[in-house]
Length: 75
Length: 409
Image (tube, rainbow over all chains, first blue to last red; front, side):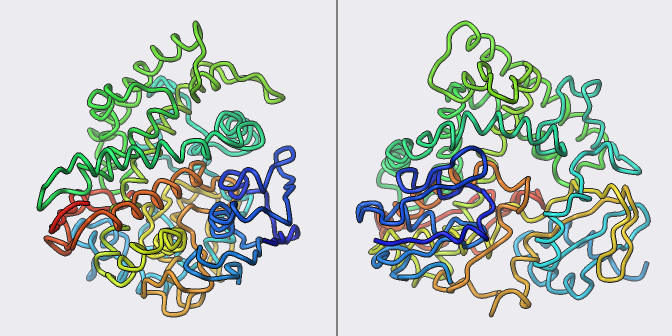
């Protein structure tokens, strides 16, 4: 599955790094690093991360069957 | 005054079950100031969001022009310094960073993720414990004991001490309610309870000094990063905050969640077959029925102009999150619970530097509890609607939620 984080929107709330720690990680207190080609078994965690982002900065495809079947939860 | 003020109506227990019509009225005057020395109520989504990011807004009671009885929370009154929820930068930032280094990324990226299995097991045990009951109270049997068990484990507080600290937690929480906190005796009780709870926790802190364990309390005691370490008093006030926040809010998220799902059974039905839907359900719940309805503890360190109204420096400011979350200028059809809405965003966890510290944990707890309840309760229905509510206007939720079932799987 592919995902993109709009780093202009990202404000470092780190919710994604709590909820999908193998996909998103904090580098220091504010910078986010992430894997744009996350493994399929991370879908559930990525769906949680997408929904939890307070500034809706994460877009992911391939989340079908999670997050209520919405494939693009960031819009 | 011919009419009861909006403020009094919002804090009036009679309106606890459904404050939303009042909020609709409230939003017509986006900056409402009804009484001299009374608070300025801010109720629209975009105003709240903007002001929660405004550095002129302060959470420190020392900046109030006219502190009330409830603000006598300094060391001389309670024996404990304010926790980071009642501090501004840079002290807030230092203490929150140290607390976070024991809780989340970048230092502890897996602490919460590693608890997922335990969370599921705790809920399983509580639902198993319902036996073959045909009616039960969701609050006393699941929604309260679940987050208490979790926060105890996370912090390293013995679960069996819950009856002891509950006797201290209740008056502290009552002290957060704007309706009761003006009463001097309830305020005194809250301060006394905070001190007692701090003394109890100090015993655990001393243990951790001797021997560290795998829990947040040990990490707080032994923290020594770029921000230095917390003093023992800072560890105690932080732990009091996390212990209270860790269960007095999540109980309402879970209970409001089940209440809402029983009022909108089509989503309960869908959740039964699709646990992934719990993610969107919980986000929409945080908008539709937020466990923290308003933030009554802010002020401003300079005169502030909002919609042509000048809020003088040192005024009390209330952010009515529950009203902002139903603002029709932000959300289409805001009074409809709709987990399918494409644009779920909310003020349920606040925003800005004080945004909820425990949000990732609260989300997981609610998602796991609601999914399992949906799956295991056979034919659940409300015994009474609305249910009886807790008195608190800030931390709002049912005191009991009696649910009748045909069986438990």
